[in-house]
Each structure stands twice: as C-alpha cells, then as structure tokens.
Length: 301
Length: 250
Image 1 (cartoon, each protein chain N blue to C red):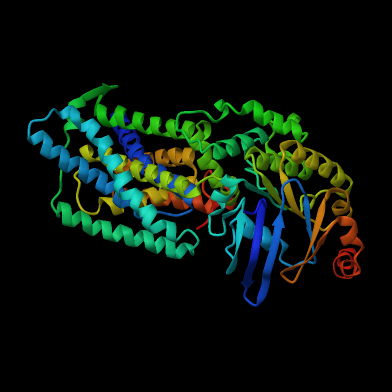
Image 2 (cartoon, rainbow over the protein chains, first blue to last red):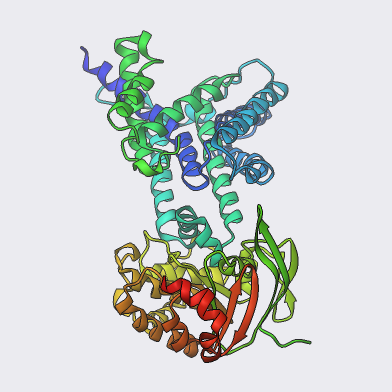
C-alpha cells in the first residue's frame, strides 16, 4: 500500500479523535462527578456547531474578518455551557440525582429529543457550512502529503490542551479539589460545609461547554445538519465505555484508538467505517467489562 | 433569651411505624461534654442527624445559639458552628490527611478558585497544628486510606475542628477501634476539644468511656430522653443498669 494513504489515514484518525475527545471528555467528566449519563450531550455538541456555523456565516457575509471565527467558537461554547447546561442541571437533573438510573437516562434522552426539534425549529433542515477558520489556516505538507493545518495541528493541540488543562484543574486548583472531594463522597463534603449543588452545577456547565466547543470546532470541517448530534453522542458513548466511565485520560486514549481504527477502515474496508468504533468497544468490553481504565466499582451501567 | 448552645424542643420523627424521636427535649450548654447512652434503636443517632440537618423532624425545633436551625440544610448548620464526626470516619480517602484538612478549611472559608492551588492556602500552619493536637502530625502526608482506624478517627476529629465549630456531635467516637486503644484515643480527643474550646456530645456504648470522659449523661429510650445527670448518678441507677448496661453486657 502507498505510504501516503497510511499517512492520510493517520491524519484523518488524529483529527477525528481530537473532535470526539472534546465531546467524550465532557460526557465522562459529568458522569464521573454527577453519576448521570447525559444523552443530551449530543445536542449540546450540535447546537455548538449550529451556533458557530450560522453566526459565522452571517457576520462574515456582513464583512467581518474571518479571524473572528476563533473567538466565536469560544463564545458559542460558553453560550451552550451557561444558557443550556446551567438550566438543564439546575431545573432538571437536580431533581433526579436520587432516582433510578433508567429514569435518569430517560430524562436526558427526553432533553435530547426536545433539543433535536428545537434545532429544526431554529435552523431548519438545510445544512450549514462555514469553513473560514479552516481555510484561513491553510495547508501543510508533511512527508509529501497535504493536509489542513486546522485539522492536523489546531484540533489535536486544542484537545491536548483541554486534557492537560482539566488534569491540572482537577488535581491542583482549589475548585478542582472540591470537585474531586464531592465526587469521592458527597455526604462527607456536605458535612464539612461544601456546597455540593454548586459543584454539580459548575461541573455540568463545564462539561456542556466542552460539548459546545467540540461542535464549534467541528463545524468548519463538516456540514452542520440534523442528526449530527445523534451520531456524535453514540460515538462518544463508545469512547467513554471503552475508556471506562469517568476516566478523563482514558477517554483520550480511547478516542485515539477509535479515531484511528475508524479511519483505517475508511481506507481499507469503507463499508465497515460506521461499524469499526463499536467493534473496538465490543472487543475491549469483552475482555475488560469495566473499560480499559475503569475500576469495576465505578461501573454503574 | 436562652443562652443554651443547643436546644431541642419537642422533636418528633417516625420511620414507618417506628418512633425514633417522640417529644425529645434537650438542652446543651457550653463547656460540658454530654454522653448519650441507651439501647440500640432508641433514636440516639437520629437525634444527631436532626441536629445536623440531615433529617427533618415532623414536629419540633432545634435552636443553635437561639437561632432556629431545624429547616436549614446540613451545610448551613455546619457553617453556624455544629460539626459532626460519625462512627465511620468521613474522610476523602484518596487524599492525604493534610489535604483533607485543607479541603475542610476551604469549605470553612467559602473559598473557591480555579487559579489558587489548594496547598497555597494561608491556613497551612494552622492545619499542621491541628494535626499535631490530635497526635497525627507524623502522618500529615500519608493517604488516609493507609492509616489505622484509630488514626482515621483522630484525623476525622481534626477535620471537624478545622471547621472551628462551637459544638461537635460524635456518634461512637471509639467504635471500630481496638479496646486497648480506646482510652488513648479518648484522652487525645478530649484534650484536643478542650484546647479548641469545643463542646461535645457523643453517643457511646462503652460505659467505661462514659464514666471517664463525660461531664453529663443523658439516657435515651424509645425515642425519649428518660434521665439526665452526672455519670455517677446515672450509671448507678437501677433502671439504667437493667435497660442499658445490662443490654450492653449481654
């Protein structure tokens, strides 16, 4: 096989893994702290993408500089985190933390369904495509293969910074340590006066913001259209389950594994492309039901 | 205006058919360590849970320094000065003893920051002194899940004291500890409480400990306070010998 094909497959896999990681890491963070599997996470991703593509399209058409695409992504992520994530946790999830897991799943699934329709209402069925950010950064030649700087460098760098940032935040900073304390023992945390509700809200807003950022970052690389949220949530579940629920570093490894596996299939057995992520998950879970990095006790579903 | 540290008025709570508190009236005054004794199921732990906000009574009120705290969430009650330490130490087991104290102090100060490092808090020395006070300075940097049960109990007390409470409620402070260690732990504990100027209430089944460390004893039975007095009076009372001590000996 031509080595350029191999390189292309690796680059595709890497950039795709970076995007999936952005979504999966928020999902696993929320699960790790709140013990809720948030199906609506896929919608938050999609809305992040829609916001970026539609607002970007409008302001660039009005003559604003394309460089604004980058701050716009951060704004879209913040909007998703605060305006959607905040109310979802505060008004809905807070009522169901002590309820059975099946109910929790159904509630977040209902939120997902509602938000899917909201997307159709607001943005309709036509696809949005806004690639200024991607075009601006141009291409790079690596061993004779041309690839976009945006996908080959920016996306993996942002994903790596997110991983390192979250790690440092959770292990070193005061707020991060309070989050880990509440995660370890909510009751003990409350008995020393920690506001566990506030910690939950903060965690959900951060997790939702990461999904929004994932969508915003994905928008220049793909058409934004109905159904992308569903596709992403299923794939993120595969990553999170493969890694072990609640494992942040594990999610990075699993995203790479699944991203590379998927793109390898694209170039060799394209008909298996959709299936490969789940085959990888299946293979891992058959050997280690708790996931690559999970501990059996932490496995809730 | 009452000057009681804590006052429970006419508390009532039921779990199904069981009455765990049936008109409990009790006052606790500053500086006197009160032991609560009574047969299992008498409602002793329930009482502590009501005072700390974890259970809401169906009737009655709890006042702390004259303020009605009955309906406040546990966190608010802690902030007002009522700490608790339970049978099983409630520590963050994946953290060191020092980190547990630093988490507690950030909770006490209501401090939260995504930029400040936890270890950079100004109360580090204060926390080291607290660990020293409970004789655990040598394990400050050991993960608490690696400590003996006795040590964990003491670190748990240090965490409670880090909150600067006025009142500490303890549920069997020496349960799960080898009987040879019990008196040693109580010695350290009582001394630390006196030094920190904290009044304590503790549920206890070991009459030797009650006799040696309590200033006063309240006897619980069937959701009621049946008797209250000095350890000598109470432990010599025939009803107590029959209902409480007899059961403990059996």
